Image 1 (cartoon, rainbow, N blue to C red):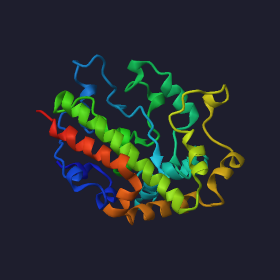
Image 2 (cartoon, one colour; image 1 turned 30 degrees about the vertical axis):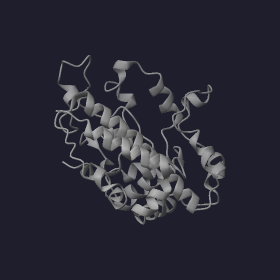
Image 3 (cartoon, rainbow, N blue to C red; image 1 turned 90 degrees about the horizontal axis):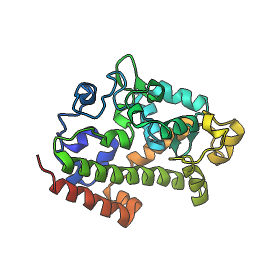
Length: 265
């Protein structure tokens, strides 16, 4: 299976063809038949109805737009989070502070086992992700065991670093195209991977309209905003993409290809 088969179609317009065509099939750790829910050789197992989905990813603005545009099963969850002001910002939708605090203070064995940490986008009736085509980078690149052993895990780490950089570059470029300043963008990054919390922030699940307003730079309709970000990214090609990611992004691409060259089965 080529890597492009596990990525949102929008990426196929501009990612390096060598990366898109990488054959990195993983047959041991699969979402439909969770290995770690049944293999007792792991230090601890996951609950079959939770799997490794006890994690809420950051969803960049263009991916939010893609979910809404394609009306994936999880689009109603997205719409409700926007309505409830659950940390839906121009850059994307962030895990709320209440969740980030609980996740940061979990015990090791809580991962895969604590239902209160289950992802907002997980469909419990179907036992799978409801935004699969636009799932977060961490979700796309996490495998509890690789067919390729340690070299496979190393490759997925390189891929995570690369795709995390790519999605943030694309999300930030959308804001630049919409006249957001560097300061406007950096003010939103403080919501990502937060480590220090005030007493109030430890249980904060939503923001007030007054708190959100300054971040939106005059834009009134978040849904239309996210849809337009998706359209902007759809228009990217390899040439414009290389300009967006710059030398650092191109170096990360090289690291992915180097990691693939080191694979061993």
